[in-house]
Image (cartoon, rainbow, N blue to C red):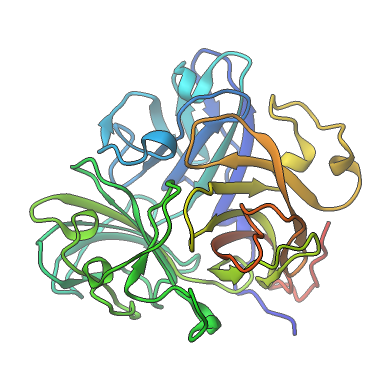
Length: 370
């Protein structure tokens, strides 16, 4: 069944780009929007993941990777957020000379924030309702409460960071139509982002309450609502033809599980959550066509088919590697590996996928795989 998108152009809301550092000031341009959430990583170097958002501003960064539980830090790595990208300093983290990088960019509310009193805890919100993305800021109360998220539909995925303390990122994932099966995600589960730990179960995270079209709930966990601490959340609500998050179960077969998204993915984040010690994987079509130093790829993957083998692990600071293979199709993705990172037999995974081409766009033209 075709899924019609209401979004005319996915790159108006999400784009990932590769670039080569020059060791000096450099403008990353070519986006069709001014980014509100971004993360940058060296593909051929062991540098730290660097992430920011326009609510906190370019002077503050939040860490992914090996140091993901660090509180926010003050930086001068980005000199400006521009109408079509970012301008970077010479920092090796994002712009080392002759180093290949990837940047991921999402559109929020164009840095336009407003106070939101939909929940029992007042929040500051910027939202891109068309794309299903919002950034939410609040001060923790230490008691169960609700927080307005600024979208018209309930978030299917929420990432939360205690900005003040050394504390893991927390994440909520909607279990979808797998409710009732073993090891599915529910409102008393959470997974630490960018960490290899398995899911945790407690009402302290989300007060055992589903998000609604106006609010999401928090309990008294230090990672989601500690008294007097500053918090930031990224909320993602599924949008036909553009973005989908959820869960799936691996089968341990090289002809693995197919996950329907309703669009051709551009990039996917995947993590095994029912047991520990597996990485968070970032897979992008970009790796088909460029090598990690930024040069055009001459590998078989660039010339034949849709196997995405190259992988950036989001819980460590290592360079891009050839690991488990994922296949991108016009309507979703499939695991093509027995690797436990994405397709262990009987294991359970969370994912969020961002689309390149919808199955059927606003022009009513069918999308293709490649």
